[in-house]
Length: 113
Image 1 (spheres, rainbow, N blue to C red):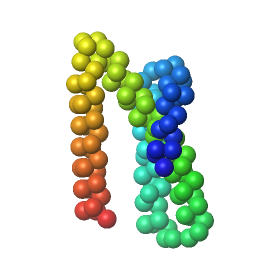
Image 2: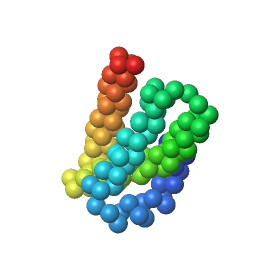
Image 3: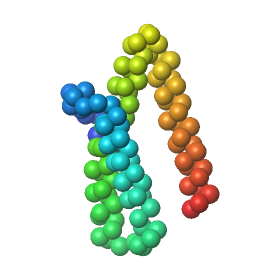
């Protein structure tokens, strides 16, 4: 679902640049947390048709919010890289951090669940 909103990056960039990056990234991170809570909601409540519909709708909405997060991160890294002309290095570091956090998060969830 996250890739559904990613194609709207050029549309988002008009609005992302109006806000400070700390607010954009924080708001996107809240969308990520809501997405994760929808992902584990069935563990506590159980399966039902209503819950599945709520999870799908919530994941769709959070996909758009998370695409704002990733566009905001990319814009921030781009602005930081322009300072000393090392945009490629900063994008590499940013991608490494994001992917390492995915690996650690998946490992922790595999152990806990």
